[in-house]
Length: 221
Length: 280
Image (cartoon, rainbow over all chains, first blue to last red; front, top):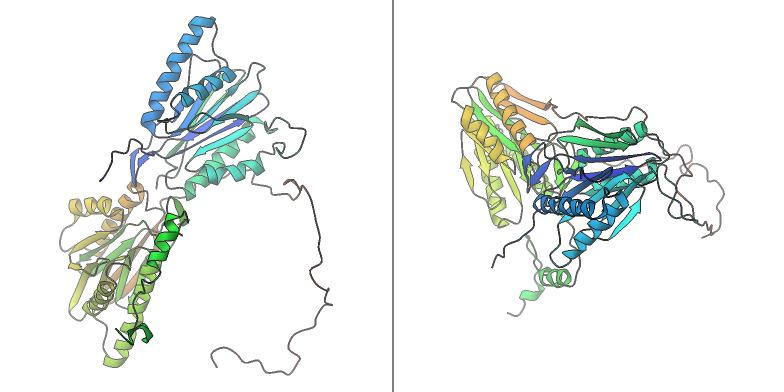
């Protein structure tokens, strides 16, 4: 007896890397279902424009992701009206966690990475599971190609090791251009081996002067 | 029945462990996966013979296991076979029939016929009742002319002027149905096959990388490995990657002697000794 499955995995990978005074958020733009491609140019990144320097990248079920983005947008507007200021990135991080846990027993099939600048202007990255467990880290990858990327990022970002005490912030000491270069290469590599990642890569860079968006082409097979 | 338990297995699969495997799977054991080829494979008949085509991606679930594998297998100098499905099955079944055809050539002193390969393949696959997951496009030219067949895992076959198989078969077939006509020239045939495989490569996630083509005519066979390479890597970091030792934190070190240290040994064979070589 076939039951209706409410979920679908639309594939793709998201990455965010935090630096001393910048944050890079990137995601591929392929939307797929099963072995078919639905779109080669579908953005997985939500700009959360009303929030202060904060960008959400999500992979998973795009239906749930669109709903989650709308939900967050509405809650952000309410915050602005109640507190008379834009939401900071750490505040948005907590809000996202609460929003996800609210649907603990019928979750949003969304694997999120939130990136931006904190109130001191330092890069911050928050990584989530589907039900809202989150952690502030220096970098993270989520999605179908995440397992292919994380080991490379662990090594090449030259971040302080989380195993050594005292615990230090895992923000990368790399420059902004080096970090962007690494993200592009790591996506090109993941595209070679993950069938759900490819087509093109959308890169957002957030720093003190604002938010910049860039695209590069990836393998289309 | 008395005595039947002692008889040795005559061949084919033994299903004795199926119940135990099902029990293990139910108690949580994760079964090993199969390497499937994903795949787009095609074949068409043109004026002077047949053209076969295939992509070169082999997948293990969502991961690309081989970016440039060979899916067009040799059967006889005048017969080639494209394979889709489980990679081990297509490889094994084509190797086996290729050997059988060679023995048959020695016995008959004649060039192999495509229908011979076809019958050997379909008989084998039917005997294994679909458990050998091989979906094939078999093509070749013999004394009776050019032939193109498809073979399904359960052992059924079709004889066609143009054919596609694999997860990308719908994408490839849409190209064939639009552009195929009888009496294509060699160049037109190769281009059409390359277009059909490209459709599979770009629109099917199970297929990718390069286009392999094989042209078989009365005069001979041309195997065009990587005839088209439309998917180069898009970005390489100009800085390169460093993997300097010492970056991975060593938390603790322990060196333990597991046996006596042996002094450096000289050459195993002294001068003048005769070594038996394999195959002699």
